[in-house]
Length: 305
Length: 319
Picture 1 (spheres, each protein chain N blue to C red):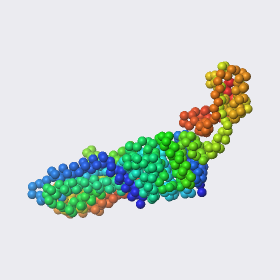
Picture 2 (cartoon, helix red, strand yellow):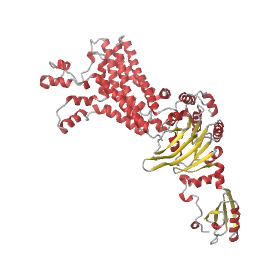
Picture 3 (tube, each protein chain N blue to C red):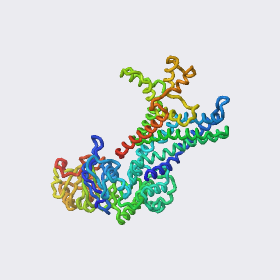
Picture 4 (cartoon, helix red, strand yellow):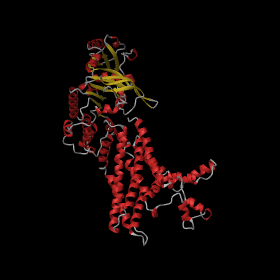
């Protein structure tokens, strides 16, 4: 497998980059400090405190990990095109698919190492402090975080395959972060409101809450948080997308958390399949596969001069 | 079977740039072929098509009897490539570069032996980021030699090399050729092609202007020579260009320069001019392949089209 040879060489090359280790060290420091100061409200059992700790680390990663991964990966292929070293890579019996796959494998390895460092540091500190190890939640959140990182590795390798120079790759990486994450919760931009406007005012159609929620759901940022429900104990799960329906169903459409009947209404909401937690995995898979396929398709046809 | 053959190969970039136009080129097995031309002549574009880095707009290319596009991977298994304008992986050592190439080509070479061959034996464990241009070029050449390729494609191989390095590379190229390897290398420097090549092809502005052996080129240019006469005064009408064997005459200040097809014509020029005026100095030069090269390529990017060797134009001759 040539792609493995490409991956091995790339991994060997990148793991000697000091900046990479600096970033991984910083990530470890962040999660270590969080583990050191993290506490629950009085009376919370230690095991739950530690579970909450790992959930918080996932929350940090929801925003931070894409940045780290994009920065570490956006030059994977574009950088080699820019410097001309790709002529070695492709002067050898490697196909362009080997190059894309090899880079993907190597950078997936790297993001796994980075996430593992964060989780292991936090685990060691929490073991010292609380002497509990909630293995199920730990493994579940770890795996889901690696998957989330993998999505951005895929997108970044795709961006890198689509662009021919460093500057364009930078633009692609920044653009990716914007459309996949920032646009969904930057103040001033309300994707939901935009879709509602298009749907109701421009097209003159009736309100469709599920549609608006789904539009938010296409962000890997939300998909990750929803998919996390799959590995969390019930008490930690969040009720994305159920709240709006629950409030419509209680208190004459003005229901809010804590009010009578609200919790039961949340329980009773039956979301369409495309808003379920499981569908989060589908959305993450689409983010992983579609950009990569597009990047590979373009790269396969590009003139590398 | 030809080692390389192109058939009507054409590559256009965008609307305006015609990098290679209708190229028909055949390189026989076992020969050392020099691919000459000024910068931007289309040499690298041609090589990039052979390696499937870029795809032709029209026509096709075959390498070792295989289609350059459809069977590129198989081709690259059997050739060695020294690309142009590359950067090495700065954090990997020379040995690691070679090990990677050996692994990828599934070859049985010993990295140390290759380091020895290209003169990097003492630097094999240094990261390539600290290499000079010449050392990088040596390593890249070593990488091209891995797996005993049937064909070596070398794009401007001597750039950055010191005279020793150039000597060494020439020696290796000759050894490879003697062992049956076809060598195809591009250069914009004529002298280096002259020293090793069996045949040369000259590209200019995307077209192949000539293919010949070095000897053939010399013959074609004959014993052509140039003679410069510095005169005390310039008579009104000398009509030097009308002398038999004189191809071109230019006058600059008090100096008459005549390009002659044969050495004998030089004597006639001197005698003819001496009859009309005092000749103060004579400078006779034999035509070099360099001039020939320039005549085919119009001096490359730096040459004006008017400098191109053309039959004597009476309008130009005022003497």
